[in-house]
Image (tube, rainbow, N blue to C red; front, side, top):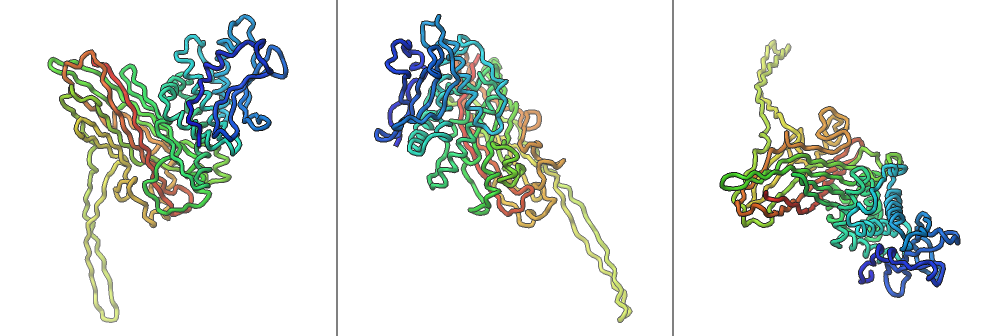
Length: 500
C-alpha cells in the first residue's frame, strides 16, 4: 500500500538547500515516494554535474542497493551572487524543464516546445504551487513509464490521489494551464492522458480496473462575463453505458482506446438591475467537443483499425444551478429547437397485365401513402427542474429519428455503405466537423436562461454549479464490424458571478 504521509513540498526543499560547502557528500536527496517501509523508494537528488564545482543537476532515482536513475534535469550553473543555492532564474528554468519533459511523453508533441515561453518569475502568482504541480505531474509520468515494478503500484496510487484530491493541486492546474496557454495546455493533457491510458490498460490486463476521477481533467474559469470549463478525459476512463458485444477485436480496440475527449463549454453572463429585481442572464456562447487521438496516425494504421474508427459525440447534457437559492425568485428558459417537419405525399401506381390463354385483359390498381420527415441531426431542448436549468443536445439517426446515444444500429444499416454513419467525417451531410467533433453556438442552439434574483443580493458574489454529462458513441465508419458502444463522462464545476 502507498505510504500515508503527505507528499513533500519540493519547492520548499529546493529553496532551502544549504551551500555546497556544507554538504557532507557530493549530493543531497529527499525521499519523495515510498510504497512501503520494506520496499525501495523514489528520491529526488541534487548533485554536482560531471564533478564540476559550478554545475549541478537534479535527478529522480529509484533507491535500490545501487540507485537507478529514472530522470535527470538539464545542468545549471551556480550564481555566485545569489544568497540561495538555487536562484530565481534557475527555479524558472527548472519549471520549463519539467514542462518540456512532460510534453515529450506525448506521441504528437515532438519539437513543439518553441511555444514554451514564460514571463519573469516575480510576475507569476503562486509560483510555488505551479512548480510543485508540474513536478508532481512529471513524476507521475516517470512512474508509469520508467519506474521498476516494485515501486510503481504504490507510488502511482499516492501520486494519483495527490493530483486528484489535493486542493492545492486543483488550484495549481488552473494557474499552470493559464501560464501555458491553450495550445500547450492541449499538448500537456494529451501527454498525461496517453500515460493514464497505458496505465489503465496495464491494470486491466491484471484484472485490476482503475477509474480516473473526472476532477483531475476539468477546471472552470469565471471572468469578464464569461464562464468557461475545460475538460479532458481518456475514452478508456469513461463509463460504458451499453455495448453490442462484450468483446471487440484487437485492432478495433486499439483505435477506440487511444483517444481522448476534449471539451470546452462557454457561457456568457450579464447582470441587469431592474426596478424591483435583478436579472441574471446566461447565454450559450460555445459548446465544443472533439475526440482526439493520443498516438500517431501511422501507429493507428499499423496496430489499429485506422484513425477514422473512433467515437463521436451523441448527447451533451448540462445543468446550471445556483447553489444558494435564498434570493432566487424565478427561472425562465427559451424555446427548444422545433419539432421535425413532416411532409406527407400520396403516391398512386397503376399496374396492367394481359393473360393470353384466357384472352382476358386484367387491370390492377394499387394506391399507397409515403411519408418523409425533414429532421435536423441535432435537437436542442431546454427544461427546468426547480431552479436548475437543463440544456440538452441529442443526435438523432437520420433514417428512423431515434436518439443515437440510447440505441444501436440495425444489422441492415451496418452493411449499408450509404448509411449516414458511414464515411461520416467526409460526407457533405455529416453531423460533425471533419475532425469528428461538434460545435454548438448560441445563435443556433439555445438562446438564453434567466434567473430573477431579489435586489438584496446586490453587492454579493453568487455561486453556480455546472454539472455535465457527455455521451460518446461508436458505430462503424469504414471498418467491417458489427460492434457498437456508448460511453459517458460526468463532470461538475463551480463558477461565480458578482451581483453588481
